[in-house]
Image (cartoon, rainbow, N blue to C red; front, top):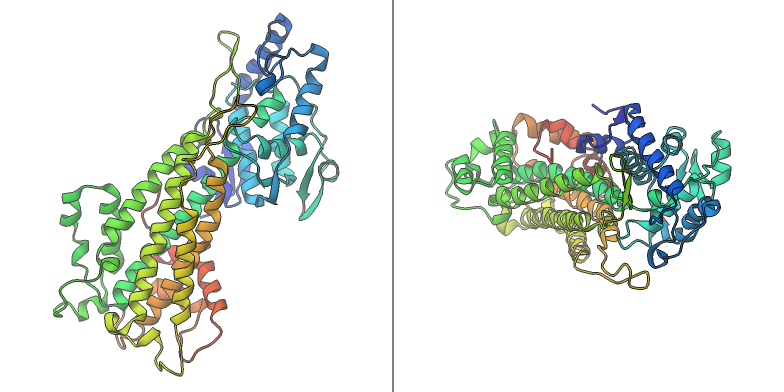
Amino acid sequence: MAVSSVTVTPGRMTLADWAAIWRGAGVTIDPAAKPDVDAAAQTVDDLIASGRAVYGLNTGFGKLAQTRIANEELATLQERLVLSHAAGVGDALPEAVVRLILALKMASLARGASGVRWTTIEAIQAMLDTGVLPVIPSQGSVGASGDLAPLAHMSAALIGAGEATYKGERLPAADALKKAGLEPVRLGPKEGLALLNGTQASTALALAGLFEVESGFQAALLSGALSVEAAKGSVAPFDPRIHQLRGHPGQIDVAQSLRDLLEGSGILASHENCDKIQDPYCLRCQPQVMGAVLDLLRQAGQVLEREANAVTDNPLVFTDTGEAISGGNFHAEPVAFAADQIAMAACEIGSICERRVALLTDPAVSGLPAFLTPNPGINSGFMIAHVTAAALVSENKQKAYPASVDSIPTSANQEDHVSMATHGAFRLLKMAENLHNVVAIETLSAVQGMEFHKGLTSSPRLEAVRTCLREAVPAYGDDRYFASDIASARSLVTGRGLVAAAGELPGIA
């Protein structure tokens, strides 16, 4: 059941909470966070009143940190910081990602260690409530000092600069705010820096990628089980004793899931005494491959859950001692590593799916009609659908080169080692889209293959998946226009319709 609204409780958000926001749930900040936020804002005021030089409060930024700024120019300092850093390029991020960025920034600021006013957090809340969403270019961040350019575009809209979307229209941000009945924010001391510093853009992109790859993973468990049925494969490799001896939790969970999915299959029972000795790896080693993928996704999920709950701007305000301490929580290395792991996982899921499509379309291996058409020759069947899957798998391989191994110095060598987390995370949504198409092609292939086993039915759960698919895509006889069938099947992967039909499957949580 979809969650209609999520209360952002700073420091205690779960992956399920962020997934609900990604899928469209409303967002409300927990008002219990206000006292801590107010205390940190008062600490900032006290530090400025003391006359001490504190980075980001009354100094310049980056290489200009030694430049002292007069108190009467502090508001101007913050506004110019936002405008100068709004230097992103490229296509705008999807609105669902922008909503995640706003929610993540709100959660971080509400921890009470950033020194912003509660009214500034309420202004972010108001943008989410009214649907005024900043236009954030997708390129321009190296993942330290945080996602400066993307978050500057977010912040620019907050102060009435740059662009925003409102009710489907892209407008100057000032006009979008006015139409929604909102006023631009006048930034206080440190607020521009608190808004710009942080890993919220890269974290939002990595979370979105994680959730979409998880959808592909779960649908691939189904397509893999369907392929076992189409190829009349063996359930013996999923015996729990095998997997307990190795001990990897993901492998154990995947083997259990495959056994559950195949439980009660008439197709399986029909060949239990056949003379086939072993299945190819793409059928037999599903627990080992998909289990390793699951462990990797779970590990990445744990990292991103911590990061989503973290305070990642700079300097950080400590109200108990009245200090603002400059550090480096904005460095997105944990996000970069997690994004690389998710990219690897997406690659491997698609790779093993494509191998099963190749198996099913090859009569010498599958025992099924060539290219899964009842009348090969005059019909090409699934020949080019397999080529498409192969192309997408190879594209994902190219995209999976680790981003985190790269670095380039910026800001006159002040920021001399960076994470590259943002573009490492940005690629994930395209990789997930490619993966969903590959899984869709395998699902179409496997169900078509099963239907050559006349008079035999699969397990109740897999028959529910087959029914779900066949309601969207009719069975194949003679060749027809294929692209729309793949698109319909992909919608059932992306929209999690096949997973809903099958019931509970292992995932990241």
